[in-house]
Structure formats: C-alpha cells, structure tokens
Image (cartoon, rainbow, N blue to C red; front, side):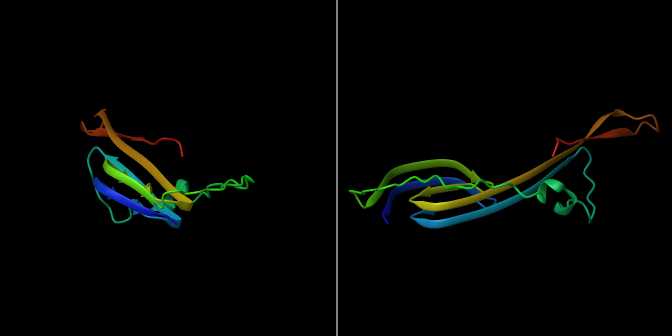
Length: 137
C-alpha cells in the first residue's frame, strides 16, 4: 500500500456513476444506463423512456476469463505516489480517475440514442412528418 500525495486537482465535472479516487482501492464497480431521446417537437408522456423496452439494456455483456499466469514482483522504493498538478475537464459515464492502485475495475455504460426529426411538410394539412432515426442495437 502506498500513499497518494497530490498538490492540486482541478476537475470541472464528475458525473453519471463516475469516480474520483485519490488512494488505493480493491474493487470499483460502476454502471450507467442512458436513454437519450431527441425530438423535433418534444411531447412528453408518462410511459416514455423505459429501459426495459430496449434490448441493449438487458443483453448480458460477455466477460473474458482473465487468467494470464503473470507473476509480478514490485519493489516500491518510495512509499508515495506524488503528483503536482492535474487539470481535467470532465470524468463522466462510468469512468474513473484514480491516483493510486486498484485490483479490479468493472465499468459498464450502455447508451441508446433515438432521434425523431422532422423531414418537411406532410401531405395531410401541411403537417410535418416525423422520421425516427435509430442506430442499430
């Protein structure tokens, strides 16, 4: 175990299941689900935006077996991790900024973007038609 000695850290934003860690840790687990709906004419309903309606949020992510058989021998001559100045704009969406050691990180972000855009005037009464554009899941 080592000490984290930090002069200055300036981070403008840490959000959406992200972590700022100064020091050692054993395990970090962070999850984020984002459903981003962009509408040409926003109309909000009470049942809009349920994660369970989209398969991308439910499908298990395969995890590789990590058994590398690597032996590591470390000799820390200095017990301190020394950092002078750090400037970061943003740490976001299940990401980690850490000064120190960590044994295991399990980070997951799932994002679904839906854009409902107008594409000119429709035939009926000059009302615009809405085109739903979705990237493949």
